[in-house]
Length: 88
Image (cartoon, rainbow, N blue to C red; front, side, top):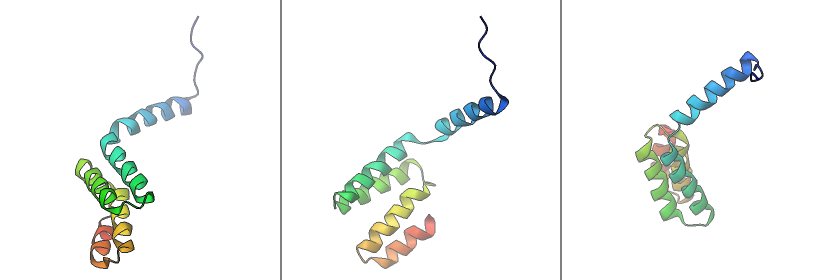
């Protein structure tokens, strides 16, 4: 038997989703999410390191730069916060 025909939009979505997964840097996301967890545990030093590692794997990872900006703002290090937020 032949497989059911898919609507063209379903085929396009599948192709786009696959490209997105391939383009995503999973190492960068792993470090970013670890940083988020560490930040919630009030461990800002290791969180800072995790966000920097995320940026080392993907220098254009705006969420990691943004997280570093807010982390530094929370430490009242406004110069560093401004620098990171400008990069995000």
